[in-house]
Image 1: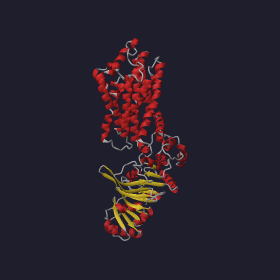
Image 2: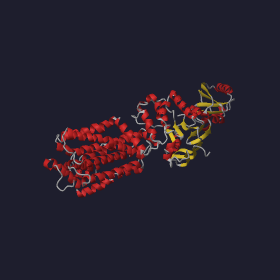
Image 3: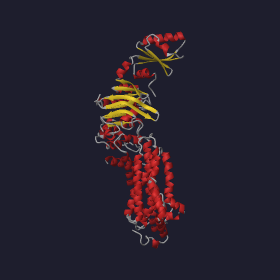
Image 4: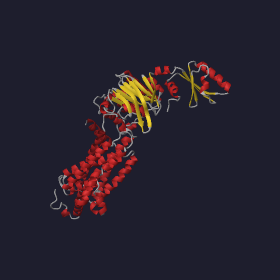
Length: 306
Length: 301
């Protein structure tokens, strides 16, 4: 516990009357990739920005690399690297100039040439920032987060708004950092990102951590059941669906019936029989393997998406 | 110190790549120069020498447009946020932009002097030490005022509106465009409360009458602008905001208004002594009598 690189205890952050972070607690161990997974507005970015020393906290206690992010802000900034959400660079700054400029701010620094190569930006070294594509800008942002060879790296929504191809490239970069045993804290609202990249995940909703553990443990905890999503011609209540043979749990989420089952064939057969008896029709049916989405639905009754 | 130097280099590099810079720091000052020297002074070397003060003052005062716009754009676009996560401090950010602006203003000033000498045959530019000191402190102070404007505005549109509200009195009541001596009494007295008046008069007395830095009139300009530069820079650092969404604190506008205090006090004193207005009048009068284009007897040089 005391060896954790990051310690967060009962963190609270308010913006006026709105409580964005409501008593969040977690620790991050050295060499771990830790994910904060949750919908937009869940309080992930506020939490991370408090850890980076960019925002004040209202109550609670946080420590990063043994330092208080506010009291030791200058010292801490030499130890951390960050790719923030919604930041930019001057339009007429070239890629290599940006890396050299930011490397110049730190006591410890990595060779910008090496970062340029590693993030596949060699050909763009002399390109102005405003001429880069979204994916290239994001790769530069990640490269810049490593320019001081930080002890802890923060990536806030590293793949938000990027197309699947670029997203996969970013995943490869993060997986490489993971192999290097870099301590990394990332926020995301993409389930597959958290499942694929994170050693442990804190699922955050309405400013609170509602589940915390490895993706495997979280899924096992939720029952490890297969998710069957059906749309019907007439509405059906979850109370009735829960009574069907093979159905472990059922909820109606945004007009879709989400059924969890450990015996999917039986559940589907009993559902179809029930619908026939009620004169109801099946419009669509989808079967998904258990994921962190199921954990979120189970905890909140809502889907985890924008 | 290293961060300040690194940022200053970046600001110079970026400004040179900016087309707006070309307009505000090259085309506009030289436009004023040729208008004043060629049209108003009709190419007369003494007339050009008399108008060099206002021309240089306009070049120096233009600093606040560029700096306020650059800082607001950096904040609006989230560029400052990126710097916030590094060990860079607000003072590094602000001081680097002030110094970069000074470095970029100097060549324009130098070229204006070269044109005055080579095209309009101005034989002498008075006391160049006084001129250099006034330009240095003037650039720093007007640049810092730009930073204060940026600290109390959120968007580029707001910044431009405030800049225009400030710009027009500065250029029309200070002697930068219309000689103070020709203004109505009310306008003359209103000008006494503006920093630009002391910059224009100081530069004019340094160039036209070759007043030394320790002469009372140049020293008055230097000291008042230095105090103002210190105050505006200190306040801009206090009110600095990294985040685009961070609100302007309530005290900010009050503190920004406090930057007017030094010239409010100086204006009251000048109102009683009439010193600067008398100096402007004397210089203006002497332009009509070439043989009197030297300081009156007994004036400290």
